[in-house]
Image (cartoon, rainbow, N blue to C red; front, side, top):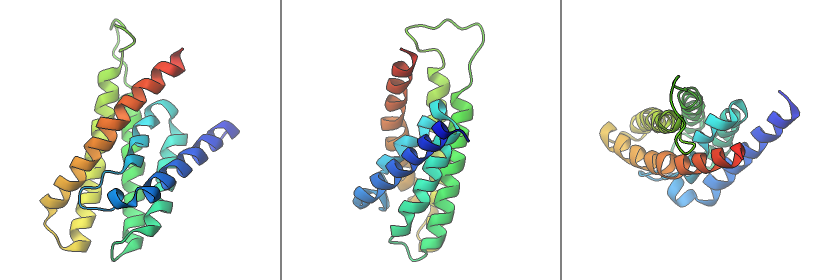
Length: 170
């Protein structure tokens, strides 16, 4: 890794952990609106540093998990973030050939699909392991985590991604 990439990964790690810990009241509930998860779609722009950062940030922040098995939350939460950000990066980076760039929106659909894919991955991975360790109905966890993930990644992360993309292009 280059020094710039290492610095970016460190920033993403710290931001993710601080946001989860500072907003713990909404980060560890049935409907988990992890504002920190808005950083996951930024892997579409920043690549590996963001993927590594949101993964390590999840490890650090899940140490404070109120769940009966912190180790499971640390492990599977980090796995969910890793794959969610990796898939978001890959899908969000798709470019269609022979398309006209209208107002800088070329690739906006791919980026949104990347955000949506990340939200679905977190929903199914986190919702599934939480259902197993809490013995609560699976669909309840999927619904709760899904709503929070859509708010965080599509409702906050996607607009943040688009703003940063425009700033980086200028």
